[in-house]
Length: 308
Ligand SMILES: C[S@@+](CC[C@H](N)C(=O)[O-])C[C@H]1O[C@@H](n2cnc3c(N)ncnc32)[C@H](O)[C@@H]1O
Image 1 (tube, protein in one colour):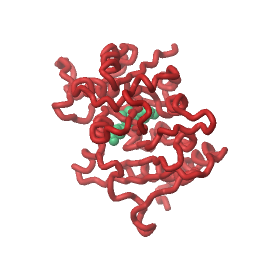
Image 2 (cartoon, protein in one colour):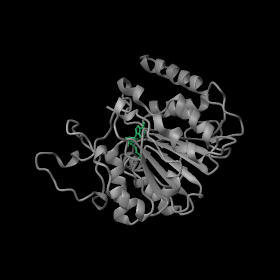
Image 3 (spheres, rainbow, N blue to C red):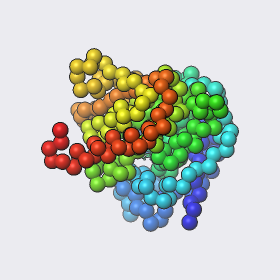
Image 4 (tube, rainbow, N blue to C red):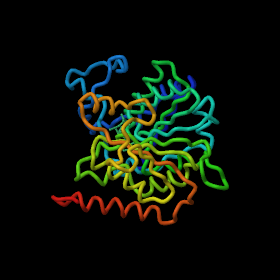
């Protein structure tokens, strides 16, 4: 059965109010048990009544399968959906792919009132959490969240904002793909967000000078993210090691850490960051195939007990 996709929108109080009427079609099904979730600060935890039959940490599933048919039905967006989301839709846009509970996007929007930031998140419960958080804080008005599968819906999210002649989205300034993968286990790697279609969409929609910031705490995942954008024509990799080191950036480009980043760094673990800027080269027709092949080649090495 075709599932109803819920668009969770929030920027103005109007849209926050709309979010309060968030469709039960997006709630987790009765047969889909929740799993343990990461702790959040008590200030941001919604005051839901506690079901004593369940552990307190069961409110938010950590991940779901983006390959399941349920999450592969494309969303349908009104042509003016974006204008209704933001008070100043003409402002530069940052896209946060895998925005989870929204803390990062809300922090960035608070710090950078001159941009709009749109979080794309596949888990309806996480989007609801982000919207509740936003409503409790009363804004800011320059952040919104959309429940969608970035592997399916990224292009249709950007298409209504595109210039008809070039296909680019002139206001798109930055794409963020940070700790995108709960599916870091090898047996689940086909569920990872990065693929040729996503890279092609970013290349086609991001105007020259716009950038994509990639971050992971899993080296294998970070290498894959970087290899995908290295394989695609149209991007210049920004390095801060003069070409002498491993190529990972020392610091977070945005200056605002994500929730995952804080947790990882608090545990003294490494974070791998890289950044690519869109250059003036046209999008190559074979981008999807070339990037998918680069990913396949890397994964072939992952199987080897002695990767090069
Ligand atoms: C590990 S969390 C990181 C969240 C946040 N970016 C951070 O750094 O704190 C990854 C998020 O990406 C989301 N995600 C995974 N695959 C996705 C997809 N195909 N489309 C949209 N969101 C996705 C997950 O549901 C999860 O919330």
